[in-house]
Image 1 (cartoon, rainbow, N blue to C red):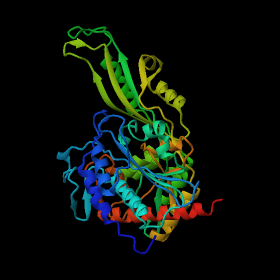
Image 2 (cartoon, rainbow, N blue to C red; image 1 turned 90 degrees about the vertical axis):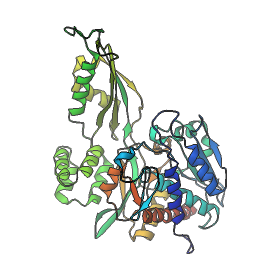
Image 3 (tube, rainbow, N blue to C red; image 1 turned 30 degrees about the vertical axis):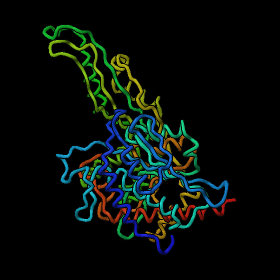
Image 4 (tube, helix red, strand yellow; image 1 turned 90 degrees about the horizontal axis):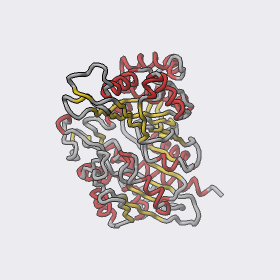
Length: 454
């Protein structure tokens, strides 16, 4: 980075503005209203960019800085603009006020992912305005809609319908997290892989009749209730992945516990041990080492005095690398039993296997270069996230994608995990500034790394 690089404070103010735009994505096509944040970005950059709006209000905006040399590798920065809902009564600060208090910026999206979104927008302006060295390959900024509901109106739409706008060789996106380890040894988590969402809508059938005469009737609500009870309480299939094995030493939990955490026969006992002191970390470890199935929505019946002939529910299912649809079906058949399983209809909502990128190559090395500058170490912790991001649309095309930021120690790794879609989401203003400077260093180092590639 150049010596006169700003400190990144403008990213803090931009993040506050994005929080206040309240681009809440409920999953309904008419929610989100990301056009509000697109206008904020246009005003900040003084440039309209290229706006893609597949349906009214669900807008993404794309910008490009051309590199100084033709045919060099292109880097895409792809943050999202939408956030999940928040119930104000549960929060200590208004979730959509973007307040700064006690060194923290509070609000929905402060962690997921408007902090990094603001940082990437500022870094792009620094590139465009020559505040940091001009890249030798193109740099694209695509601020996208609808990440929180599958990217249908955002990244997925761009990849499938407007590839010319986002065609790239490498991707930076989410998830970012605080450093890991002990006081004497720190490492920076870099998201390299994510679980595959295989959400299912489940329908159970029955025979309608008068509610006063239930004997001998087939009640759809009871059938679906039984299925959800069994699915929710059954032990979930274990999967110990290479990414997890590589990640565990960075947690700094001690040799004995670390050994248990990579043993499929001891992982559940290890999670119980961790949960005694840190239930949030235990929950995350479970998600990173198990196929997870969470029945979250149930709808059945139409009238108090009618036996329901249909009931519907939604299950959030996430598969690990190495698990597939056959593994899911085998698990459900085993848990439910053949009769109940065959009596249900399972309709895919999302149907994607896990994805990941190798922890190598010029962008990976550039992240290490930036870590060495800002942390004094290039120790990186390749990380699997149990959530789903826009990275999958690019990894499916063989394009490496990583998520990274640089935060201070005011919030621990487990504490930040609890804030994703949780209450009192917040991040220090200092972390937003350091993430901005860090990502600027990543972009600069990436340019230097690809300079030496023939």
